[in-house]
Length: 599
Image 1: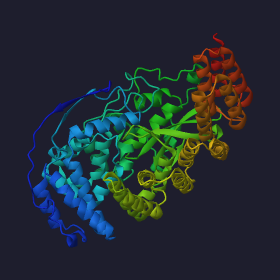
Image 2: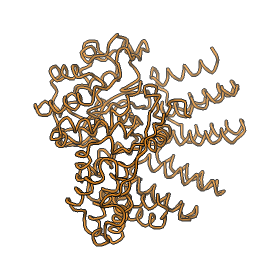
Image 3: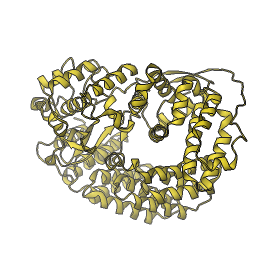
C-alpha cells in the first residue's frame, strides 16, 4: 500500500442486463455508416446509467469495421460511442489504482491531496444522470474536447461528479458553457498543491483552496453575460479556460481587480509594471512575502518582487476571463518571474515582464489540470493551436485506433494505424509513442526502433526539448547494444546544437552525462567527466548550468566525503561560467563556495 493514501473498497454487486444494441446487434452494413441519432438515443436509454459494459464489444467491432473499410466519418462516430461506453462502464475500484500510479509517475503527489479514497465496484455511469449521458454521447464537439484534453492524472470520479452537478443545476447554461464546466471539473478534481501559484508566500497569507464548483461556474458565467470579461468564455476551449478558473484569489478580490485595474486586454502586460519593485527585499534576500496577507490590494499598495508582479498580473487577467500563466525562468545572471496571456487575436503572448536584458533562456509554468510543469513543446503547441485543425483531428483518429489495436494485442494493425497518424500530422506526439510501442511489440529490432526515433527527432526539430528527448533515447539504444562511441557522439551533437540558444537544454544534457558517470565510474573518472563537461558545455554558461551541473556534482562529492574535490569543482565553475559582479549567480556561487569549505 502506498504511504500517501489508502484505498478502501466498497463492494457492490451488479447483475448484467442484456440490452438492445449489445453484442451482435450492429450489422457490418450499419457499421459503415455514421451512428444515427435515433440509434444513439435508443442505446443510451437502454444502457444508461450503468449497463454500458455489455455494449462495448459490438460497438468496438462496428468502429473497427468502419475504420478498416476507410469510412472515416463512420469510424469517428462509432469510436466516440466506444470511448464513452468504456468510461461509463469503468468502476472506481478499477480506475483508482491506475490513477495513483499515474499521479506518482508524474511526481505530482502533494500534501494537500486526500489520503483516503473510498472506492466501489459501481460503474462511473452511476454518477451521471441519464440526461447527461445522452447529451455527452450525442455531442461530437464536446466528446472530442473531453477525450482530447483528458490526462491520466485527472481523477475521473470527481470530474464526473462536478459535471453532473453543474448539468443538473441548469442544463441549458451547462450546454452553452460546457467547456467552462469541463475546465472547472478538470482543475477542481483535486486540491491545489501548497507551492501553487508560487512558493514565495505562506499558506497563512494566501490560503490555497478552490471555491465550490457551482460558485465558480456561476461567477464566470455571470461576468461573461454582463460583458465584464475580455474574452467571450463560451468561445474558449477547456484547454484555455483551465488557465482562467485556476484563480488563486477569491472572487471578492477579482471583483476589486475589475473595478480598480483599468487595463485593456491589448495592454494587459502593463498590469505587471503596476506593482512597485521592492529593491529593499532583494537587498535583504527576502524572497518570501513578508506581510500577513497576500491580497491584490495589498500587493498593489506595498509593492513586491518579480513573482508578486507576475501573480498580480495573472489574477487581474483571470478576473477578466483571460487565460494567464505565471512563469519562472533562469537567465545568464539570475532567476526571474513573468507572465503570459491569451490576447484578443487568440494568440498566446508568453513574454509579459520577460525583459531582454535578463537574457532568459526558458520558462516554467504549472498546468492546473495535472500540476505538472508545462514543457516547452506544450507551450509552443498552445501558441500554434494546430491541435484544433482538421489534419490533427484526422491524425487523432488514426492514433486512437492504433492505441486500441495495441491494447487488444493486434500490434501489426497498430503499427499501420500509427504510421498513418504521423504521416497526416507529424506533430502528433502520442501517435509517435504508440508507433514505437507497437513496433517493439511487433518484433522490431533495435536498429529499426532507432530509425523511428530518428524520424521522430526530425519531426520535432522545431521543438528542442522533444528533439533532445528522442535523441537521448537513440543514445540509450546505441549504448545498450554496445555502440558507446556512437551514443556519445549523438549526445554531443544535440548538446552543442542547443548550447547557443537553449543552454538550459544543453545543461540538462550535461547533467545526464555526469549522472551516468556517477552511476558507473570510479571517483577519479567522475572528476574527469565533470571537467570535460565544464569545458565542452559550461564556457560562458549561467545560472541554469550552475543549478543543473555544478550544484549537483558538488553535492554529490560532499555526500561522498570528498571535500577537496568539491572545492576544486566549484573553483573550476567560477573560472568557466559567466559570473558577472553583483549578479544572483555570483551570490549563489559564493554561498556554494562557503558550503564546500565548511565555513
